[in-house]
Length: 239
Image (cartoon, rainbow, N blue to C red; front, side, top):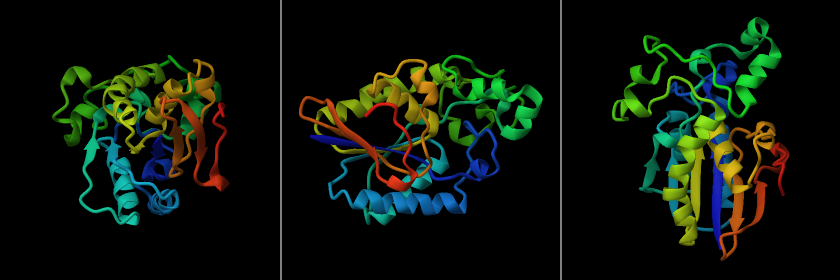
């Protein structure tokens, strides 16, 4: 048996301000830090050893993982940071307030940008300070891999090869894994693991700072899946 824990970072400063964040490297809001610490407490209650730790390049996910590790009293853990686990790039919507954009484009269009499978927003200009080419943490990523905008499908195509090669392979070796990432990178993983179709994935919500525990049997089949914070659980569509 092996275990996979997927946890979306705690509430970020731009979550609090209701802004499209994407690849911009914003930090956790105070509530987000508390959510991360609570995640650690909930994970501790499971009483199993975690062998591998993965996160993205973005500090809201990195700091969520650090707070979880601190709560678990795990020191000097080898954590693997992968840009492939970054949030979806929201293109020209990046930095904009979601409610204000609904007034301009209409709620239906913004919902389409946020939840549809294959409808990316307009590209973000490379002259914009929010474009990843202008953010220092991405300097070592080949330019051809840095998106100007992404649909959920684009995010899936970025996340899945990495997940299969680096994370699923460890699960098959009976390792227990914790991934601290983002709403859309986790949705991509869930689409694959639960065989969700393109319509189902648009309905899947991932709450901030609530660990999702997925149990696998010896044949690497999912046997159980649930959020650890029962008071903030979301419909998984499956299970």
